[in-house]
Structures are given as C-alpha cells and as structure tokens.
Image 1 (tube, rainbow, N blue to C red):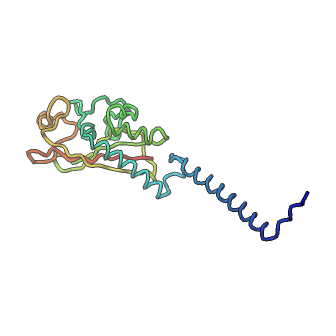
Image 2: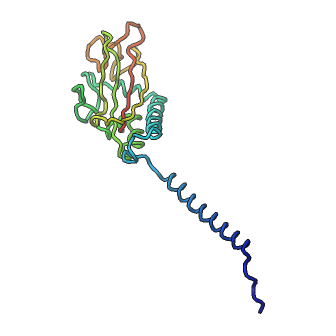
Image 3: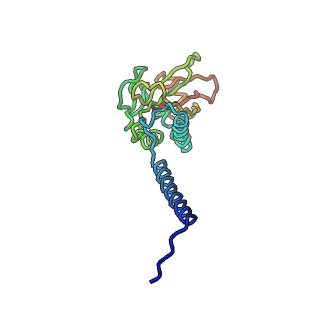
Length: 206
C-alpha cells in the first residue's frame, strides 16, 4: 500500500485559512440571526438610543396614519356620550378629571387602540392618548382618552391632526347641534360655517 504524501506547508496554510473562513462565516450567521430576532421592548436598552426612539416614533406615526385612512380616527375623536364625555370609557380618571379608556377597551372601540395594543402594549409598553385643541376663546385645552400614568423622561410622542366639520355626527346628532346645546365633549373653536375644530391626536409611548 502506497503511503499518502504529507501535506506541504503551503497546503497546510490553505487548509487553516479555509477553516478560519468557515468559522468566521458561522459566527457571522449566528450574529445576523440574533439581530433579526431582537424585539424592541422597554428594557431593550431603554429609549436613550436615538435609533430606537426613531423606530418607535415611526411605528406610532404609522398607527395614526393607518387608523385615519379608514375614517376611524375621526370617529374615535367624535365618539361622544352627549354628556361631555366619551362612550364606553372604563379606565382611570385622567389629569383633566374625566374618565378615560383602559388600553384593552380602547382597542375594542378604535382602530388606533387595536394597533397600539398589538404593536406596543403586548410587548410591555405603556401609552397615553391625548386630544389637543383650542376652545371658543382660543385657549389651548387637552382631553385624555387613554391614561396609563406619567411618561418617563425619554418617552416618545407621535401626533396626527383630525379636522372636525359641523355637519359630521357625534352620537345621534351633528356637531353644530352639540355646540348649541352646550353638551359637547370638544368645544367649537371656529367661526366658519363648516369648520368645527381641529384636533391633534397625540400618542405618548414609554
């Protein structure tokens, strides 16, 4: 039986190089897999990282845009109970003294809430939803729809503007009639025959 010739120094060097290359590829693939598996949570380094802040803000902004596309965001803003509040609120009292929605129920009554719960609440995030507008004297007012506490110092906000018109309905009657009866949940701020108010829907996440 013939003995196989020993590997030369050049051949051994090539073998070591190939083994090193394969090992590096295995490590690289493992790192890439781990990065793809990362899910942003409140404990993933916090929100101090600007790239995480930007990603969370963009997701919240997308939630507002999507919920507005089918008209549901405006319906959520106009979901009045005729007594100065909002229908089906079941949460704690907000900073302004009105009852708010729990996150769970907000997901049942609005597209925005459903998206926020799936995208954030189920991953451990907390969020508040506020309505910002001006009253009949031009002063700024805030009405909280969802209140889960005071946001942290590194909280992220996203907002979207909804225009309300006097001919739109809130409950059983048009907005112009709520203004006349003084039982509105959001006051009239415009002297226009058509424009009722402009409302900023603001989402805060932490």
